[in-house]
Image (cartoon, rainbow, N blue to C red):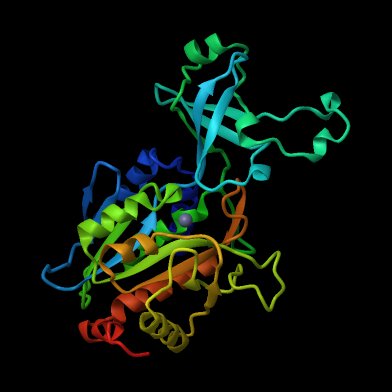
Length: 362
Ligand SMILES: [Zn+2]
């Protein structure tokens, strides 16, 4: 895929509106992109199964995973003043929320612009501006003056999803993207790109790219995809939080322009160590930069895939600065390196190598 086409795809993917349970817009965009290279199936949870066209069946299966949803909000109730009481979808911290520009998808499917309202300093008591309100006390204003107007004119009510509204920008000179939802649209783009590169080519294993829904609310889609695919080996393509702007260099384990991160541990997951070592050696051979990370928090679809049938699994993380906030940075070269690594694994893996991951030795 040409660089310009990759950048266009990444920009489009970032701009798509998709929060847990409401992934439709991005699922359609993803399917349109991957369909030339795959046979597609979509389940009722909006998980997408894209099976490489050259798959033969009866061979071990490698599952690639990325998730379609991104963090957002849901309308809980319309307040008497017409503003929305909302709940978070996914892992937000409250100080990242006030002032965020959003879009509310109303009951007719129309996107209504709004903002997480903040009280002007003019009305604050002494010291009030130093505190961040609880999310339950925050409200979204769509420009309505009453509950009746919100319900009847804006057609917004309980259950309407709310999306962060940020346009993706790409800096040609620095090759850095600035926008929202790179977690995990960059991972999804790797799957499209990978199948495009492998179009018409045979691999040693069958390849199924699964786009899972509802990851941000507990890996829910991936439990289903893994149960259906029953992979023999899996690669999770996740966009992972970068720490390079707030950790000292010796402790920084995921940094922009340092290549993909291979996760050694997070709260829910430890990779198969032989598979992990094989991937590190392959990256060294191909001169693909990477970092390794030991995290005490976080989690990703690898845990769900593991729990299903114990398939050797690793995570390739594309570094994203300020993840789970409205505004993020990510670099093209990290995307390219992540794609190169995923491609190298899929092309190099054999049934024999896969068997070696399951031997009780290190
Ligand atoms: Zn993610």
